[in-house]
Image (cartoon, rainbow, N blue to C red; front, side):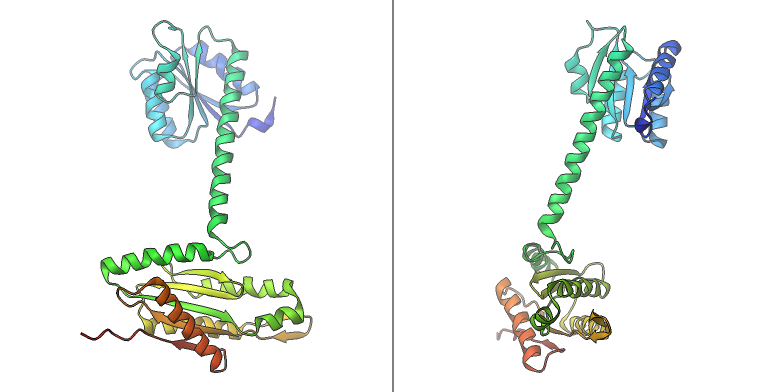
Length: 310
């Protein structure tokens, strides 16, 4: 008996006790976990409480038939369905496939053939799941920075556009932080890029720990980061920026044993002004950040747009 398949759960639906018990025994001996029921109604109840990978159902059942059961399963449950029928003239392969069945077997069922069909359906299911996982992973890689696991600059521009659209609809305040690690090139030159990467990773964790659920952080490039603060006015944004600055300042890095090093950050803060271009909004945050650099670093500076006259 192959134990490697024991995590795969099969449900057999047939009103003929001998048929379902024979199938059940054969499938169990092949290493799968299986259960049996005698009607579609019982199957539906069981599927609500348990997770089955494949349902093998007779087409002719008392009450709800096998094709109707297949439709219910495909709408409400993730299981694959193999339909079994002794009425090959009345029901076609196309009918079964059109309602969502993964395969169609004609009685009298050869158990060896049924097992081959079951293995094929499971293999296709696993390939589909693997493809889905891979696509999700690729999608995540496309929008996140590999090192820091923050969102990347591409997703920053996409999200900022969405937030500006939301601002235009609801007129709720929107603020932006632009952050740049102080003297980070010197740190890299002195201690190496591996130690520099550790700082970037830790700082990313610090940013996330200082934000609310609606806020989002991005690695803008190199040692530059941005934070989008929806529903946040300029003064509140300065408070968030100070929290990030102080938390990083309190952090101790030890690139060489016994040699503690402090890292600081310069932050620019700004608030979105109605109808302004996205580039103007970002440039103002950038200018505010450079003010922090010019004024001695490890500072938060804010620049806000002048209200238009008239």
